[in-house]
Image (tube, rainbow, N blue to C red; front, side, top):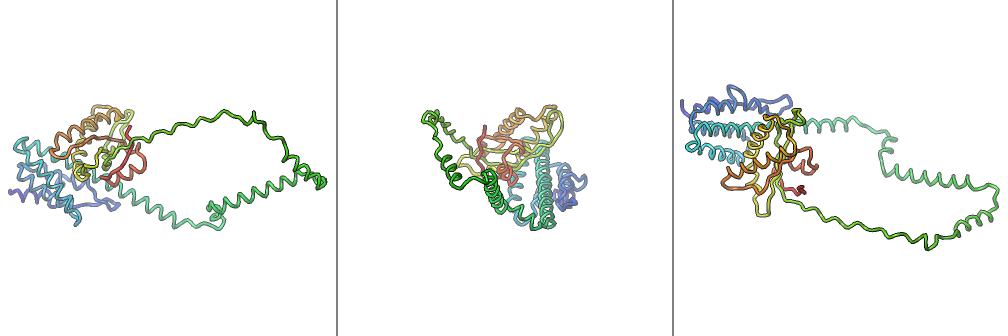
Length: 330
């Protein structure tokens, strides 16, 4: 069987099946035992067959018109890995390709889930808006300007009424005037009472030093937290300088996903919690692996943060992916 026949049999027929919410079911696309991408790669027996399969995989994953550039980048990365077959052995290269594809699968599953959730949230908001009709009284209550002005007027009327009630009704007008004048001429506080120890103004705190960072999309995996399994989304953040190319750094994301997943899985399989110390250790290992494997772009510094611990503006930038942000790093 020729290399092209292998690729057509194993990956050419794999179609993008959909979830009930309309998003692509990437688990089926990758994991189908007969037509899935992973099965196609596992069926190859040579570097030439693997190259042919990966060409079809690239066309399947990046089939939109605007996908020409990411498709070329993905295929070039696969070619670089397969080029190491003579040095590392075919089985090692095949395993490397499978790990990279598993990371790609995980990323696409997370992206589809986020898209579906955002769609549901948007639809829910629109339904509530459409079904909510305020009465004139509710509109008045919900207007802070009108309500605030009414409260001020009401408080002023109460003050006037209280003053009239407390003032004796039979007091002559001149006595009332005298009482008011007397209250205005009450002795002022003495100089001794006015002198208070000067307040010491706190020294202005220096502005915290912010780092220029590139934030990438969250990488979700199952971890242990206090012995219980839960999903954690780790956000890679990479320190940059003005001279650094963001696009070159973002091109390393597939390697980052693969390395983060493998190292986090190792922590979980060892029965250890994904606490701050463990995540810091994973970050150091990923940083070392990426810089060892990359012959071009090198990372200056890598941080991994739990998505739930980040401020909202960083979360938004992370979900968009590959963006420049500023953040104070402890």
